[in-house]
Length: 259
Image (tube, rainbow, N blue to C red; front, side, top):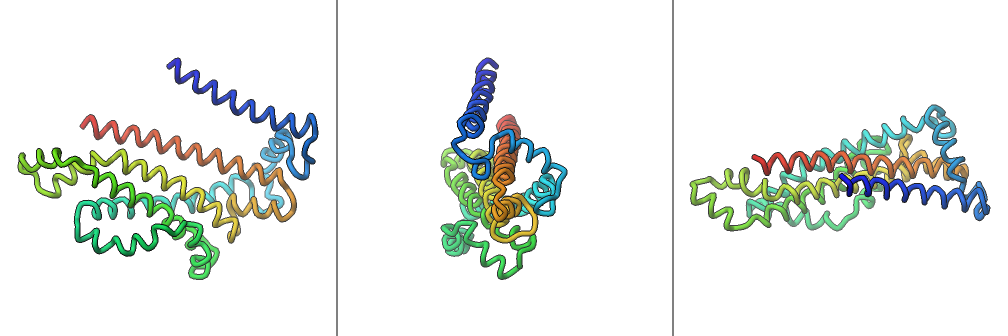
């Protein structure tokens, strides 16, 4: 508990130092003009105002956040639900690996952002194009980590299962998957970060609502205070999502170990 409290205080001091340095550079010595880098006081005022104001981009900050989250989580969950089983099957069944690997190796090096122009041409700038793009971004790390986790299952554990008469599927379900669970969850975490990054990039390029759209509109009218509000919202939400996922992972892994 003492270590945990010290970590919390260090985090608070780190944020306080950052805000103090920002305030000193902008308000005290005036290193940057307010039209280039506004002070934290101005950004805080803009943040509060944007919570209820639709100017200048036609939506409030909560509406932009909800739009981005809805699309990002839709594509992310699809990537996890489809990518994780495929990675497991590829690692456990040789024929599945031989069948899927050529296509997977082709799309694996392509970053999620590179899919955005093609998806816009195919599906327009609506929700579908962004969901498919995020799905591809989340799909790759889920497959990779699931595959790696299953492949790292120790032979001695499988031999014990065979000795007790377990079938191939039973060994997969009760030995390989529980052993690979930490690696699988790591892939799920990586996929979350990739999904959140991709949705912002997609909204910067083509969108009618969302945090990326809000930042792009603010750039066009030279409103750095709104841009920074959007950036801070992106960082805060990304950290919150990672924290929630970490708690879920701890519960799942502990539950499997106890069972």
